[in-house]
Length: 476
Ligand code: F0G
Image 1 (cartoon, helix red, strand yellow):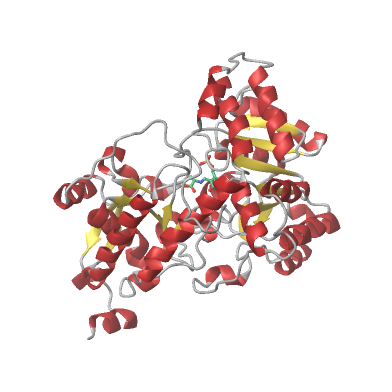
Image 2: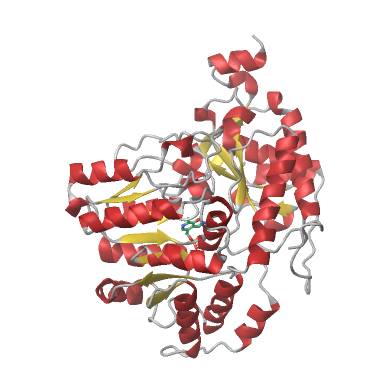
């Protein structure tokens, strides 16, 4: 990009979708009707939807054109070949099984590799990943480096796995208790933080020492590769495509949600380097996802992903994409909004502990903050805190994570910087009234993945437990 010119979208817009802004009163009514759970809002009641960057991106004209060439054959579809070729070119894995989305890929992989009582080591497992591991009656163990839990630490690769602790753990429980190591790039549940090539190389060596397969959760592999290019010594002159390939070369395979760095609205896959692991997965894939050349997708979906995988590693796209998220973070920071630092690749995370220091974790401060932001600006984010962390499947106790965050995930190629300016203003309004914001309590709770459908009722400020922080915040 020419440094003398301001950054702008490396595309022009060929189709548009109208959005509308409700009044504050209408938004408050919508919030009530959704039981203070933003997943239960109607999307047309949301002005700027930063709930997720998953499946919400805009496809390119080349992707739409490729979709017309979809081969809808049940078996041996040409579209499957095109996807397998594209994935092999971009990631280098020779064996690929499509899945309807990332969690479908997780279901297949863990059914093949994970037995009850085993432990899957990762940096911070995503919630569906954790739920699928627990569904296998196994344990999802988070062993990210300590920096990830400090919202103010600005280390460049806070998504790294703590290889020493992982090794000590393997030594303690024994090699057979660990069916695979799964490193999520970028580390979504840890603030969208990247993992360095040095760390992936160390994980490879660890996996080799113990003979344990090493997989990537590659949902945001291109964004991770871009951060390596920007931040890791020795990578500045390399293309993102070659860095992405080098990352994948270190792994035995990956799970992938094409709804993120596949630039598609649906789809995913599980990929393998090794024929024997691939063979193990086949029966599960057919049982859960469909025949091996479609995996729960239409041929046209496979085509869209095949093209998306190549577009996502293009430098101008990534520069603009990660730049837009960084500009959103800059605006919020300048407005005094407490953030988890540094900004992630796909999202900015608000630090709810510092935003609402008077709301104890038992009253779900991040959930409450997400609701207020919707009320103030029609902006929908998502809680990544105590609600999402749910309960320990064994004890039934709530597990309160160390970070209470609201994630503002930016869909790919969808919103302009003018929209981001509205998000900043909404957060400024919420911040101005933060001392008056109370908490929430759960009035209905499903047994797994509760954040998607739990219902809440407000806990007014006067009913919150008066912790030391509460007293300080209220000046009493
Ligand atoms: N792994 C990671 C790191 C994810 O972020 C997701 C989804 C998945 C796996 C599962 O993929 O949705 O295609 O089944 N993340 C979305 C999000 C839902 O909002 O972050 P999926």
